[in-house]
Length: 128
Image 1 (cartoon, rainbow, N blue to C red):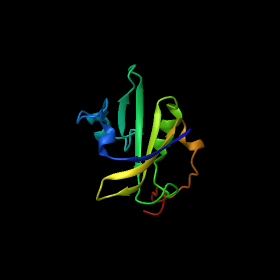
Image 2 (image 1 turned 120 degrees about the horizontal axis):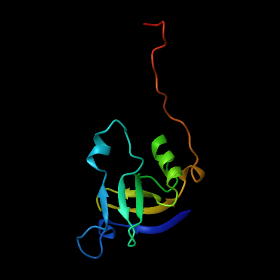
Image 3 (image 1 turned 135 degrees about the horizontal axis):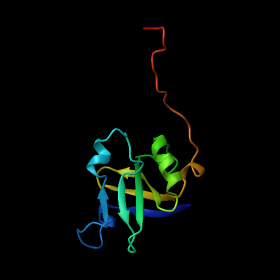
């Protein structure tokens, strides 16, 4: 489901003060482990304690500007549709630090047009 908002700034991530909303960065074991990505950027919590996994994608271009997303991020959203949010920042302005935004919730693969952009290469046996 797409939820559209207007313009956000850094102050939109606080409760009217400099205290951050309930969230934590990835645990160090997830960042330094063998996995390249945990499938999300921020683990947050709803007021009732329910987990919310947030992936943030930012571009300077408009709302329809393409962006990169990993297979692991797509898979994580499919495995956690009730708690996954892609927070899409676009029209990002470096000077003001503000952007427009929309949110995608649930399994994001069904909401995006996905195009493969890379291959994993390995030397064929017999060519070494």
